[in-house]
Every structure is written in C-alpha cells, then in structure tokens.
Image 1 (cartoon, rainbow, N blue to C red):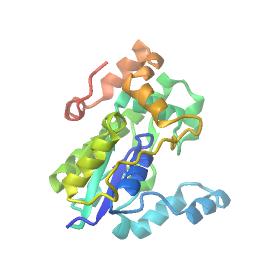
Image 2: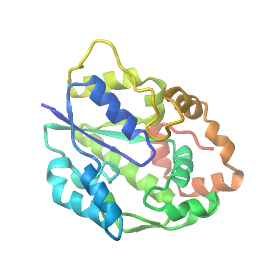
Image 3: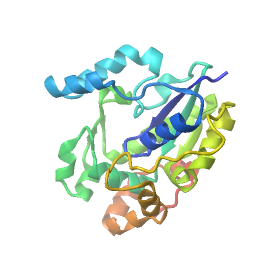
Image 4: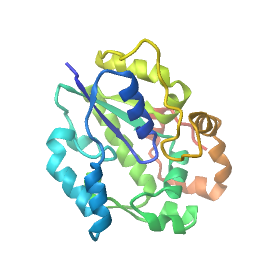
Length: 242
C-alpha cells in the first residue's frame, strides 16, 4: 500500500508546483527532495556550495530516496510503500529555462544559448549520474531515460505541459494510480508562480501551452538540440521535433 510519494524531475520542470498541489489536494506524505533550510543556510557560510548538499543526501538517501533532481534508477526498485512520480518538460523549452536559470552553474548565464548547448555539463554528486556530460542536452536524455525505467515499478510519468493544461486531472491521475484519497471534494490550485513572483499560473500556462518560447530559438540552436536528443524519449513523451 502506497503511503508516500517521491517526486523526481529536472530543474525548471514544474516540480515545485506539483509538490504544492499534492500537499493541497492529496492525503499522502511526500519524501523530502531538497535540503532542509539549515543546510541551505550553511551553504552560504562554507566554501564550495555543492559538497554540503551532496553530503546531506549521501546520509539521508535511505529515508528520502535522494535529491528530487537526481536520476531515478539508482533508487529502483522503491519500497512498496513509496509511489514514484516523475516530471518531464519539453526539451526545447527546458533548455531555454536551464540557460536562463542554471542553478548550480551560474557561469552558464554568461554565455550565449548556442555556446551553452555545446558546453560540457558537470553534474553534482547528488545527480547520481556521473560527473561530466557532453552537454546539457545529454542531461535531459539521461534523467528522462531513468524516469522511463521507473515505469517498471509502477511509477507515474507526467509532463509539465499536461500539468499546466489540466492540473485537476493530473491530481486525479495521481490519486487513482496509487489508490490514494483526496483531502477535499473541490480541487485547489496554487496561482502564484514558484519561480517568478511577478508571474501567475495563467502566465505560465499561456507561455508554455502556446509554445511562446519558440520565438527564442533560431535554426542553429534547433539543429544543435536535434542532433543530441534521444528520439526514443521524444516519442515516449509525445514531443514533436522542431
């Protein structure tokens, strides 16, 4: 019987939004996916910003199944009491978001998008997928490939686009997939953006569902991305090639 949810999804893939929706609407415990606030505060005081988070998850993996942005396969199969939910975002839109908000690679903001697409990407230890990748496109391939492997263990693979299109239906899918109970009769949404205080749920919905991000891509960038994307993943998640 599932009594806990573990959410995996890459940076900038609506995992924070889904986490809040689950807390608001489903009667289930969620395993921790990020470091506690005290660890984040210590990061500001100690040299080297990544090792402390890596160390935290190395100590707590057995109880939380790792960082929410990690590859899922090191933690398979999960305990029978844990249901895995994964989040995937359109790779073209995701790469634009990662370039804009590279999180653990702040220097990536300083290069143009085409250069960013072709630069090696250094993973953190808690990514659980090796140290260096050829480029950030490989990161999308590797993480999402691990999510498909999790399907063998009853994982529910979701997309950011489906979540933005019908968040109430996604919550119902999670409930039904893991035989859980809702907290209330009527669905409650979370309207404030989890990444940009100046934007709302409807702003994100219009931007991503209308694929307004396409305006930021040129032919050369699309060619670079297409040359590295895994076609099996594109088909599995139902994404169209540009």
